Length: 296
Image (cartoon, rainbow, N blue to C red):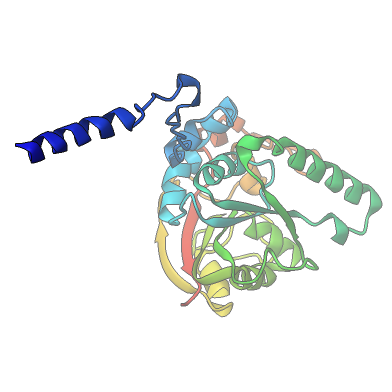
């Protein structure tokens, strides 16, 4: 009994000597902070975004951006090189989409340094400055700017690109005589397994190919041959951007059709009986959509 009493007294004494736990003031209590990352934009959301004008969106029925980029296998975290982006029709889709997914866009534009004529060089430099200024907004991410011409250097660091894209440009390079350089530069820029995506105005195989492509139209087999010669493997083609109504034999070449809708030649002459409504009804050109791969 004495032993039990001693234990009880000891326990009471120990309890009395132990200070009570005081709640921490509310001001110093750790607050749970949840930081949510912005969700990656979907490709469809990029196509529908306010970064694009109503005029650009009106051409989706002919250019099919969602289907085309999906066919090429472009992902939002890819490093993509767009060669000669022009006014930025596809850039307005690619830039915000890649920025949201952690990807990188390389805009390989016109090469002002390769132009000898001072006035033309100055105009090109002004266009490039306008292009860069237009994409300085953070929503477009950080765009890398390079150039492509007969005398240009690499499109980007060798073997670092997931995808190289060009839309309706091959005829320009055929006219200038450096189409082969494009395929060689694209091959060098891509990682092993990387994709080259080409969209170009398609010339029917029954019509003769002008080496300078003055009509703006190109044989599909010719493009495949150039890519193969550069080392690419042909993967597949798609009729996403086909237009069976386009006969590719118009008075002012492909520029007779929308969106250019030319009504005169370079000398300002219009053929007798020319009916612009006929060509407007055809719509935009028939286009090949070709996917190539750099071998692993």
